[in-house]
Image (cartoon, rainbow over all chains, first blue to last red; front, side, top):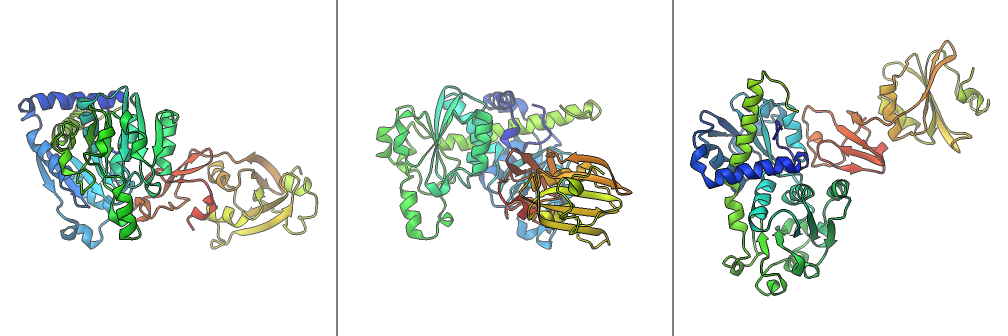
Length: 317
Length: 161
């Protein structure tokens, strides 16, 4: 992998993705082999929005590689509260650390931040934009459960605002995948994402639906996302729509035996707890995969950086 | 003088828009876009520029066209290419001592920087950060390099004034 930063999954080729997933598999098989690989390395955590899984798994990943983290803490207690720009914040924290992880509510924030720093920067979510490290653990989970070629996947829920969906859809165009997007009319994929998918794929592998029933039987993987209450004008409308996109035992009667169900979590009531104990459920495994996959990402980005230093700062091409 | 705006369309609008001695004539601007042309070029008269504007004058090539003349300033190709977003048929005439010494069309640039403002309220470029906007020019619109928002219609409304 030859990238200074990880901003969107669009920047990654199939080869890049396979490099990350293969490295994650190696680490997953024997985490102790890399326990001292990045001692004295400090990762800066800049989370301008709440996060549990992403933040904790990056922290765990860095520590399991022998490094440590420094954390900006909450926005409420930081210099941002005093009106500091993001550009200034990242330039300051860059001086303290060897790499940065950024989550920020504005779209394009990671792209902009990366223009102000030299250390590797990972986008951990920029508003409704992208979340490429989540995508890598999603792909890892799909590969483990169903394989990444000759795959039929349904991606369901809030496709408009769901950044994990946007990143995943882009990345999947690198593989032989039929993607079915299932959502209420008001939460369809943004036209920018559809435009990109058509650019990359010609549109052949992409279909949009309003009902899961239309495609459920054909799916190898069903990726469910949460439909948020605040996207709807009133409670009644929300309840009506959200209810149509929930998964319970009855829903799955029409599904294939090998269907893998995924969810980036947190879930509310999109997937009934009774599914958790079935062979379909892969969402907790998916969350656990966040650690080896983020270890692989950090290892590759930090190793690239060191390699670049050794070459006398020549630019990576 | 071979200048299109002086001969091709006849004398009719010469009465309305006087010749310039030296500077730039932007001709064949789509009718009604002249003020946007000035806005996109950042010319508002505050620096004392002598500017003449003709709007909705008859034209053979366009039914109605606008024409903008800026005295004392020769605009470079890079400066005028951004006009292709709102005036794709525009022709640029560089004038010295009443003679057109250079004449060319506008070509769509690959990128426009600091000219348009992203319409996405959730975009980092509209949040008080020290960055100029940057748009990739598509065949049928523009796209924010930061948040990815695509704009196809009403690009003139994005001009950062």
